[in-house]
Amino acid sequence: MNDGSSALPDRITRAASHQNLIVLAALALVTVLGLWITLRTGDRLMLPLQAGSVAYAALLFIMWWSMMLAMMLPTAAPAIFTYGAMSRRFAAKGVSSASAAIFTLGYAAIWTGFSIAATALHLTLENFTPLTGMMAVTSSVFGGSLLVVAGFYQMSPLKNACLHKCQSPLMFFARNWRKGRLGAFRMGLSHGIYCLGCCWVLMGLLFYGGVMELRWIVGIALYVAVEKLIPTRRRVSKFTGLLLVGWGVWELGSVLR
Image (tube, rainbow, N blue to C red):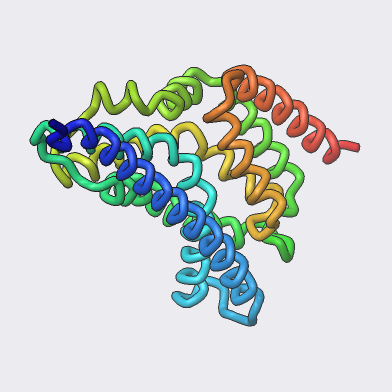
């Protein structure tokens, strides 16, 4: 006699599959909307707004914030899926848990803080060096120095340590699991901090290539995803570091030529 218990694993599997599809759809929507808002906000910044005004700073923050969410949330998909799977297992055992949305909010909060810092830096740079129409610095000294710093950071132990945490979400949750909504939010914050430590200097390269340059935005986002996901990730970051250092030295050398 079938009491329906044998069908329970199938129902759980289907529910997990549906939740993963919802998460994927939500991430895709955030990415598309984020890029659209970024570009639209950038167009508004091209209007004759008074630099340093509250309206100008607010639009600049919206541009950075939407851009960071569009670039970074998709790369957090493995962690979000892993959290969802572990949360369902704990919930089935009667352990208090929260939805993946709470974990994602904690992760997004870190990049919101970064967006505030990037906005402040952006406003400061505008007072010291001219920017192009795509909001790239025109100073070869600043640009070359930024490339060199980014290259050395790519090869640093701190970068590797943060990257390892981002690459191993299952191990991260096994060591840092917390119950309830507050616990989910705090885990999102913690994972976001590791992700920030892994990627902040790459986001800084937008000042070199152009904060409003779509090719740089998409290129850096794709690189971050590759660095986190492919098996040869450590060699990729070291190779990129050497490339950036060489590029930066060439840029600095152009000042003397």
